[in-house]
Each structure stands twice: as structure tokens, then as C-alpha cells.
Amino acid sequence: MSINEIKTTVFGFMGTQPTRLGQPGSTPVCSFRLGSTPAYYDATAGVWKRKSTTWLTVKAFRTLAVNALACLHKGDPVMVSGSLVTEEWTSDGQPHSSLVLVADGIGHDLSRGQDTFTRIQSGAAPVAPTDEGAVGPDPWTTPLPSSPSETASVCASSASSAAERTSVVASNAG
Image (tube, rainbow, N blue to C red; front, top):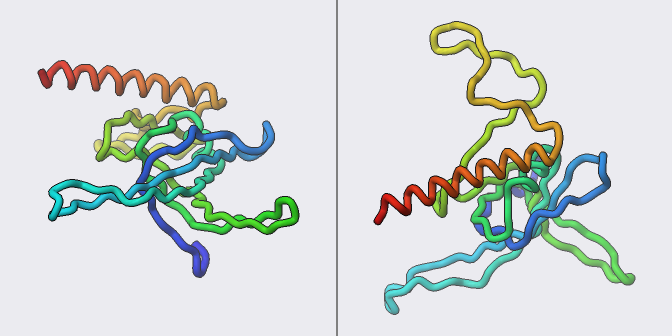
């Protein structure tokens, strides 16, 4: 972290589908819009009320971008943690600026639903001893997908598992 850097975490929802930025073969980058709508309880009226929605552009890089592209969808409730930066540009001779949240981490907001996590392993990681002191691979890790389509299939299988869990929970509730 650098001096005078603004670190923050925003809870909200995916306002757009993540889109890939840049050229094929370059560092993976994705961007999406994040909406955050605060709510409060109005005791006088006895109801919850919403304030206006704040919109931010979120950018993610490298593995975080690849995983966001594969696993996040418009409307998903998410938490994004990162650094607030100002992007500046000129368009039609006029200067413009916008706040951007450069993500260090992105996750589904589990207070609003369930998710399935698939751990990835990049490269050859050191093997940790087990509880018994024996050395062996971590059974909870899977190799890093070699392509975005492999990552998408991991997330798709996770999504179908989540849908199965939802239908089981719903059938047990009745």
C-alpha cells in the first residue's frame, strides 16, 4: 500500500456484466459497474427506505479479472475491496474524470445467497505437511485453469451445484 492511498470496501450489486478490456494476449483486465444502495429503517413510518444508488466503475486485473469474467453476473450481490483512484481523460477537447475502484478482491455477498468456491493453484506450490505430519498434496486445491473457458466451466459447474442446493433447500422448506 502506498502513502495516502484510499482503501475501501463497497457492498452492492453488479450493475453490468463484466467486460474484458485490452487486447488478446495482454494482461487480463475487466471492468464492470457496481451499484450500492444504502437502506435504513424509518421507525416513524415502520418501513425500510432506500437512499439513492451510488455507482462506481470497478476494474480488476490478472487472475482476479479472469475469475470475475467467469463467475460474476449482472445483478449478483457482491463485495469489492480495493483502492479508489481518479481516472482522467480528454474527449472532444474537454477534460473528464471519474472515480474507479481498482479491486484487490471481489466476492459474492453471502448474506444474500449461497455460492460454491473452487480453489485454484497457480504453478507448483510448496506442499504443506498434513495434520499427521505426512507430506502430501492439498486435496482442496485444483490446478489453475489454462484458459478462460476452463474457468467458465468451473464456475458453471459451481452454479449448477448452487442451483441444486437451492432446489433441495426449497423442497425441504415445504
